[in-house]
Length: 342
Image (tube, one colour):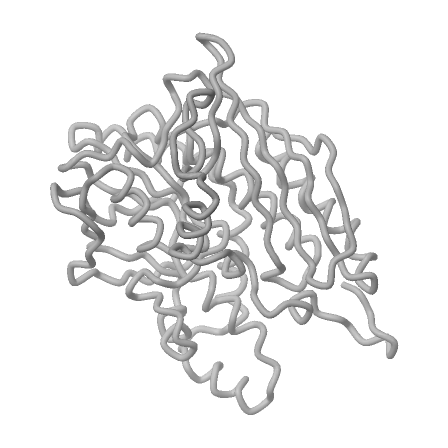
């Protein structure tokens, strides 16, 4: 971390008003922006592009290139962990398409002048996270910025027929999620510094706040590569759960697949529902913003046993969270809230 003039520890999260993927432009605002810019149509040069988690371009009959870019403001104060989370989150958009090979990252990094000493540990965290995904840092760009941010432009390859989009879900498909929800309230609790409110936050949940924070960081630094490898043979559609939250990302799948989605089960980090209620984040109704969340995949009912076996064999967390219907939009059907601890 940086230090101020009094040599006191400076918190990265103090340098921004919005944290992690909650800094993203809202879903409706983004749709309006793209419409105003005329960027809503298909592009014949691409397999898929705007509106998906990444862009896919067919290079040969056997090879497709997937590319994406994602960066955000700090959700943690430790620069090394910030780098790890940023790399996992950026790569997740490529993994959601099923592209997991030859992962390269061009780093995007911005820091206030007084936090430039945080650059090296942020980059080290990104490099270590990418190494765990069989990826590498291939270059990047760094600027001075009043708000710190980190992430990268990711490229990966796959066979064209192996790629997934949010457009293939069909009525009857089962829906799976590969990480619990709750990173926004978990990390929001760590940013509370007012002594009186700290006591209120601590008393809001029966679980120690440091355990909730530790679980959230561990989930955010878990790459979705193994989940993608296990799912992509069976899935009909996929996305990852980030700033739009579970309901928002489900709406993307519902709209682009022209189906309805019913959510019946919400796995959450243990202790976070009470924190969400305190902060008003909407976790138990699927509205809380997630940072470096899990994959959200639709699977035909004939393939559920196979995909669950593949996820078990890969030691990947998963829960069945709902189903695809012939309706339209997203609905929560008296969802079961399951609190998950590591």
